[in-house]
Image (cartoon, rainbow, N blue to C red; front, side):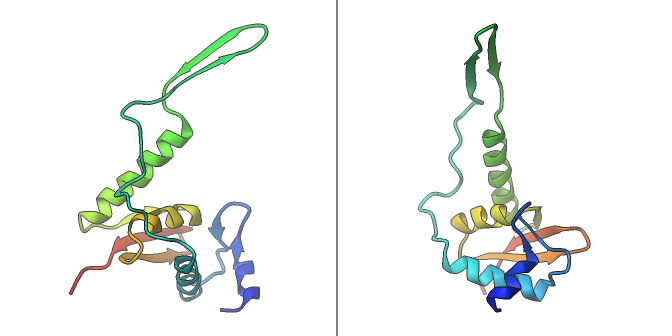
Length: 128
């Protein structure tokens, strides 16, 4: 893969260009793996409950108690990890999600770019 082939990655939304083939994606994926290290942790850390954010504006008081987008994202990544560790396949939609999965399953993670659906199928390679 040449550097000009990276133009097939739409950095604006984190997805490959629909014109990118799975073969091109696999080359990109292998390059990604070179820059991502295995985490010593089994999953993304999440607190046991959603976070509470207190925001005070000058004219009113606003208190939000509930799930943040970051909390939901960590739960999504951990859910995908759980599914693929059970031997099943799951789907991701953004390259940064694949990068996060690589941190926890660096050597076993397998991906397939499905341009017609603009998503990735993910699973773990089995030991043979």
